Amino acid sequence: MKVAVIGDGGWGTALAMVLDRNGHEATVWGPFPDYLEEIRSGRENKTYLPGVEIPASIQWTSDHASAVKDAGLVVLVVPSRFYKPVLEAFKPFIPADALVVSATKGLDEQSHERMSELAEKILDHQVAVLSGPSHAEEVARGVPCAVAIAARDHFIAEQIQQLFVNDTFRVYTLDDVIGVELGGALKNVI
Image 1 (cartoon, rainbow, N blue to C red):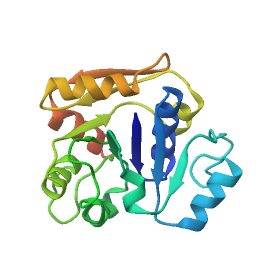
Image 2: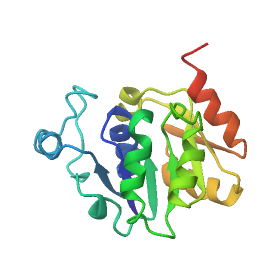
Image 3: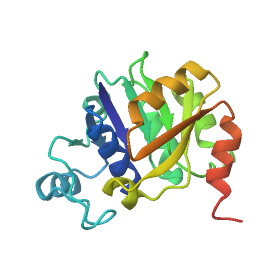
Image 4: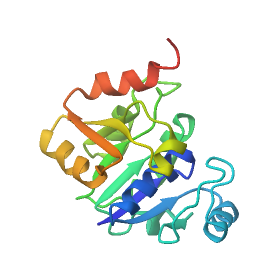
């Protein structure tokens, strides 16, 4: 399946690597073409995942339309402070039948909405949530971990689970979107 990862930081890169390991065609979007070229040519995200070799099969782009063209899954991994403007820029391009999952932790600074709540308003899609006790560098290196995929529709959660799950990336499904998302957003506050 073609998958689009919107966000070229450590977590976005790590999730793209999981999806790539699972045989999916991963394209990662980031806002800075020169930085993406550095990642592509050096096969390393030196800023966010230094020392981790990135597969050459992962594609990198700063073009909104090509990032999500024909994507069956769109993973939102943009920092919360840039979430709204980035999603607004992507709205015209996200395929209507794509599964959408938010892996961004935090709350909107102005409205205090959860990230998936904001994404659903902007994109007019049901948005699932991926969160859990994991670190980008460990996920990228294939260190075993577990995460949760939460969606109001259990069938959607199971579809997304099947795209991500492998021997080292254990994925559990839940229907408690609010609990999973707030757990991730508040974990560093407590």
